Image 1: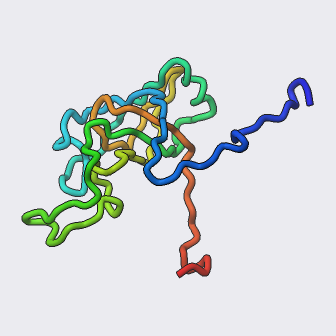
Image 2: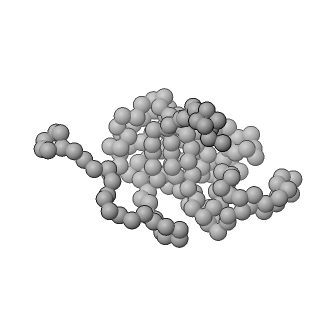
Image 3: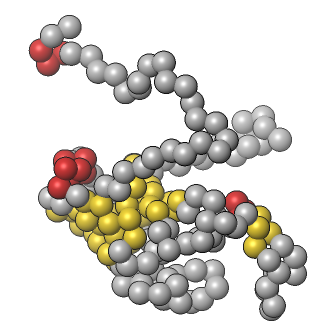
Amino acid sequence: MTGDTDSYTIYIPEIPAEVCGDIVECKVIGNIQTPYKSMDHCPSRHNQNELQPCQISLCPEFSKGIVGINVGDQLLILYWLHLAKRDMVQLPKRPGGRTKPIGVFSTRTPPRPNPLAAAIVEVLDTHASGLKVIGLDCLDGTPLLDIKKARFYKQSSTDAGLS
């Protein structure tokens, strides 16, 4: 095919999938400016801090990627918790809190083998190089990895015949 109807490919053919222990690479596409300067300021289930508007700034080479995003859209934001410890798979007991250890994959805690984080946000404003959103709970300066339209599934596991 030629011209405007050229097909495109979204996958690279014949590349083997990574396996346990392999290293994958992500590119930082921007950063997130928030009013949260320390973990104590970040909203969490451990405090009464409210979510505040945050600014997502894209690197110039990725700014065209937000064309089509509108005020009111809900997005999935993927970001890298750059200050988090990476050697934990279980959280210890905590005085006045956890009575037994718990696995990091059952929590939103920053320390984990891959300190990736995800949040559903609402778009408050758009501009050529970024977005103003509400719904993030990360530190100021957090590296941005990806932005996707949020997708919600309404069918429960029992409705789908899963148990």
